[in-house]
Length: 225
Image (cartoon, rainbow, N blue to C red; front, side):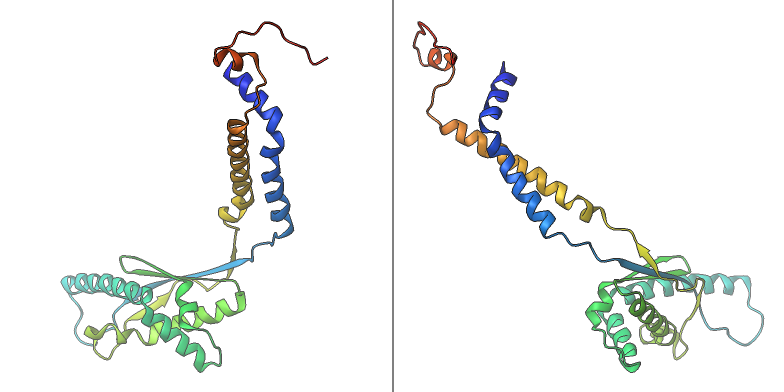
């Protein structure tokens, strides 16, 4: 019974349900712009200390060297995630005649660490500029890490790249693909709510059971035809 009532209401108010969705669809198609392609580049580094001249290291000394490398990787990750690294990369780019704000550099940076391996990745919508930013970031990492690793003295840590910096396009995000369908769903829900409100405030009596609910007895019905 309830489904029949809902169906009758929909047949009477279907325009109120459909119109908001049509407006959203037309506006969405008219203003649609293909999302810009985003590019990514990532490089892994092995991190270690500069070699020390002298007698052959013992196994214990080798162990402490590896352990120190893990601490260095953790410190480098914290450095990259802070604002000072973005500022240093921006200065390196400025020395090359490339103007990129520190915030623009920092916004596309990501770093990860796993024991003595450090990973740096960058995201940008300009592949050529992305290559230049990554090159500057590598220079800062390799030549200026003693700014934060003061315990190493005047010898910066050694970062050995394991990968070539290859720029790859990233697939479009799921958010951009679902944007219009989600807006259509919200418009349909709004249309259903609007139809329900209009039906609720409409004083017109259309069904026999509505009169019976009010306490009246129906003696006869006049058909539409």
